[in-house]
Image (cartoon, rainbow, N blue to C red; front, top):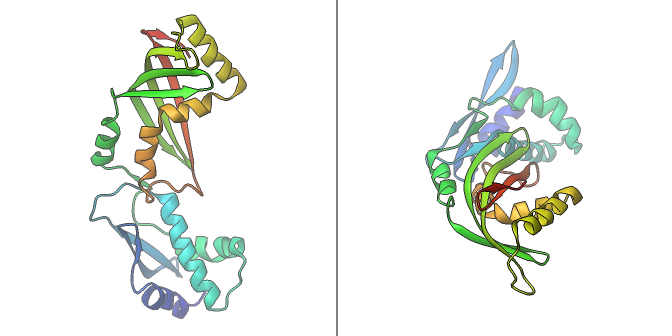
Length: 220
């Protein structure tokens, strides 16, 4: 792509910047090893969390639209490999940023009582602690959850330690434990999903790994 078209992309199509849900992405044309490339600075006045995958996607979508209306091919894979990845994808900011405010929002759910039901089992619980990992296209929570009481939904009868263990073990063996994990950790997941600059639901995955405790005894 010629320097003239790249300048049109920056100055005319983007008008010098690209807003992404409160984050401002600022492109400029420069030379590297004798080749013209676009580099991007980032302004974050609202101290928002961000991750490179959603940012990469929104920049590519803007570049693809410009490329398409200026007569380029409609083949997205070809554009990404031969034009965007070589010329446009050069970022002058870290791949990941999580401000203290997001940790504060996550921490506000620790120790709060919650209730969840699955099949014919219902229990009260609280999240004891968590670790957040964001790697490649995965956002993942590792949590310890304390179950204070459990009962059979249809009868109201309390579940013993052994019966609750068997229930959770059966879910783990069948691969269905993820559904109940997601329900239990949903308050943390929702804090992450509030931020489109951090989590792209079309390009990334959200996963939860939970260790359950019941009356102080480790279950799973």
